[in-house]
Every structure is written in C-alpha cells, then in structure tokens.
Length: 297
Ligand SMILES: Nc1ncnc2c1ncn2[C@@H]1O[C@H](COP(=O)(O)OP(=O)(O)O)[C@@H](O)[C@H]1O
Ligand SMILES: O=C(O)C1=C[C@@H](OP(=O)(O)O)[C@@H](O)[C@H](O)C1
Image (cartoon, rainbow, N blue to C red; front, side, top):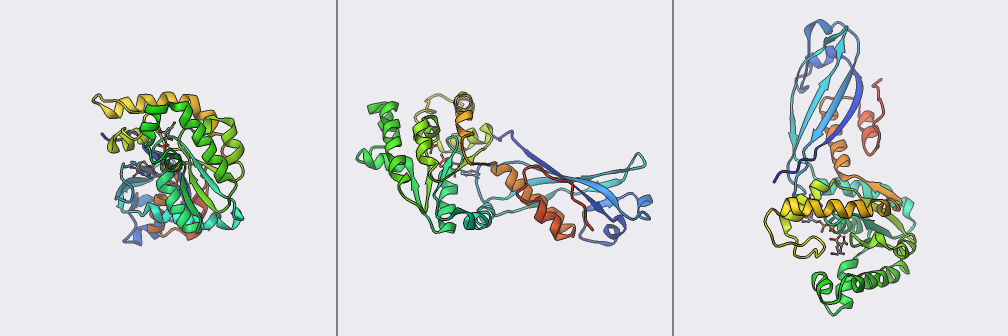
C-alpha cells in the first residue's frame, strides 16, 4: 500500500526571468510580458512522496509560482525526477556534527521502524564509532532468545529490566552509536543513562512506519504482532496508540530529526541548483527547520 504521507517544503527566491528564457536547462517558463522586468520573487515548493525502500528513486514534484500585477507570472513548470542517495545525505550530515561530539555517544530513539538500526549503522561508520543495538544486546543476555520469544516467555517487564541494564552498561562507554528499542524512552531511569551521551529522536510519520513494518512483517515486533490480514491498517492503529503514550517521552531527546524533511530539503537544493540559482541559497536551505526567505544577489 502506498504511504499517504508527503513532505512539502517551500522557499522563495528573487530571479531574473530574462535569464531563464535564455537558459535551455531551466524548467520554468515565464509569461512573455514579464521578461523586461529586472527581478521577481518566486516561490518554489517541493513535494516529495516517501517510499518504503531506502536508496531508490524518489519522486518529487517541484513547482514554481509567482504573480505580477495580480496576474500569474509563470506559465509552466516541470516535475523533476531523480535518484538520490539517502545514505550519502546522512553521511554528509554525520561528518558535519562530528567535531561537536567530543567522543560522546549517540543514542537513537524513536518508534519501531523509524530507522534507528539502519541510520545507526551508517552513522557509526562515518564517525568511526562502535555500533550497538540494545535489542540485540538484550537477546545476547538471554542466551540468544529473540525479543519476540522473551516477551512471550518472560513478559514485557522482564524485557524492560534487561533493556535498562543494557543501557546502564552502555552509558559507561564513549564513542558509541546505540540504536535503542522503541519503548526505551518510557522509563525515566533509561534517560539518566542516555543523557550521558547525545540522544537523537528519529521522528517519522506513523503512516510511513506502518508501511515499512507491514512490508517486513510484524513477527519480530511483539507489541505490533497480529495474525490477521490488513497488516498496514492494524499496524497503523497500534502505532498510533503507542505514539500517544510515548510522544512526550521522545521529546526528552536532545535533538529531533525528521528524515522526510531532510530529504525533501536536499531535493529542493538539487532543483534550485538545476535552475542555476546561486549556490549559497541551497546551502542556507539545507537542514534548516523553518525555511527562511532567501534572496539571490
Ligand atoms: N529512511 C528509510 N526509508 C525507508 N525505509 C527505511 C528507512 N530506514 C529504515 N527503513 C526500513 O524500515 C525497516 C525498519 O528499519 P530499522 O532500521 O530496523 O528501524 P528501527 O531500528 O527503528 O526499528 C527496515 O526494513 C528498513 O529497511
Ligand atoms: O517499541 C517498543 O516497545 C519495542 C521496540 C522494539 O525495538 P525497535 O524499535 O528496534 O523495533 C523492541 O525493543 C521491542 O519489540 C519493543
């Protein structure tokens, strides 16, 4: 099933319509009457459809709009499709933050399926940190018993005690990237351990999570597991109630990263580059939460 979440970002720039008329690679057409004008403000928006599988072609539609003397000034814009290496975006971002870490560990928190393990592995490689998955450590502690079996044989309370113990042990070390279990945030004692490092909340829309989890199956995630059909809707419903219970706890994290917005920003940057806007605009746009009004010189 297609995820119904889309990400939309906007920026505004001043551009010279005359230059675009002469630029064969530009994909924005202006109404002829405008070409004599020096510069006009244009609003560019990027709408990105998320996909279930990382590192595949993502579809982005980009639109430029503006009006001049109450008439639409743009007659045509073009949708833009491109492949984009999501892992590369993440790597670049990791390199940016490295100097500020001073060896402190990173704890990734977020709902099941938010990408803590996937992102954590990439992050640890770039930072040359060791990677640990707290679920795997709990499994090791219980003689290789899977999380699903631990829940079934010993109950959730037992699992949570082991999880807390694992986080305590990890908090004694530095230079780690830790992918925590989605429910680790609910015990205040776990925050005491995670606050020894930097905690980052991977915040992904629930619909995208449900799509990812339904794609791989719910067997390994006991809190979501069900035997019936319609895995997507059942998973979404359960995730929504867990979200209600946990959202405040996730907000204890030092930083919140919305990956969908990050990718959409990167696309916007690509598009703006394609149109040969000055590079600094793209630079300013990337990784800013609230997009500012930016003007080219
Ligand atoms: N950015 C992403 N876009 C799409 N799918 C992703 C992304 N990150 C992870 N996934 C997929 O989602 C599923 C869960 O990812 P995982 O890293 O195990 O999440 P978590 O550790 O938070 O439970 C995996 O199948 C993974 O391939
Ligand atoms: O959200 C939760 O309570 C849980 C998340 C799981 O980890 P992931 O977030 O890695 O799936 C795992 O710890 C256990 O199934 C419970």
